[in-house]
Image 1: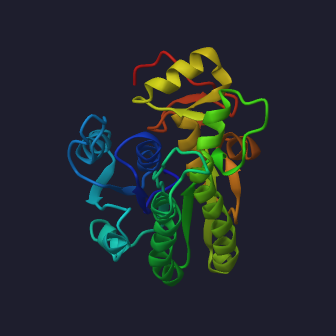
Image 2: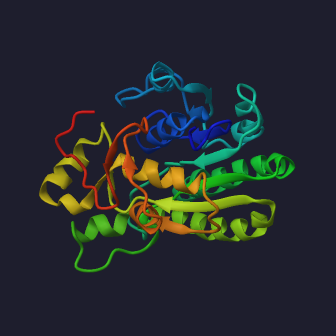
Length: 283
């Protein structure tokens, strides 16, 4: 019996990286997963497509399908949860993994750039949560997980990298801070309906198969990178447990409940909350 048997999960930003890892982990626990990204096929020079993601999950014995949506377009988000429900039924688990970012000094980030980030990273997750909640209430519960970022707080000095890198993440971090605050408010509103809303951020930079720059950082500072399986395991806990309004880091949620970190298919124990990223791994 998997922890998500009989559940339907909808994961945005799921063609690669963190979103795909979470989708794969949930599918490995029995969830029927609906993956969402801005397009079905090639992303120019970016690796990973929805077609490949769905195919890989299905090849491992999981149930998966995809919907295409440009989450930066508010009109395109209308009715998205209903569309995602058409393949496997109503959504039990919603994972919002927005990724709109502009790296610019706070004094130079324009109104348009700020508006785009806030629409993608705050309004998008809220819109989808509001679409999902009515049916979750009718069905007696559900889970909503918003993927946040450590950039929601100003890095402490002395900066690990450079002053400029610590400053240009500010506008993006502000959007994630707004998402965190909305998450806690929404969580306490709907907890009485057994709808569990939380936010989770990577403790460190997540080492995904396509993140070559992260590998370079991790070789010099192993503590600055974490395996993508850590995020997937933390997400599984927050998408199955009775947690209310947590804004938490991946390692912290894994550690606090004593979870083992599993491979994405759920078949192999990789370690615990202290697991380091394998910098030389190729997959």
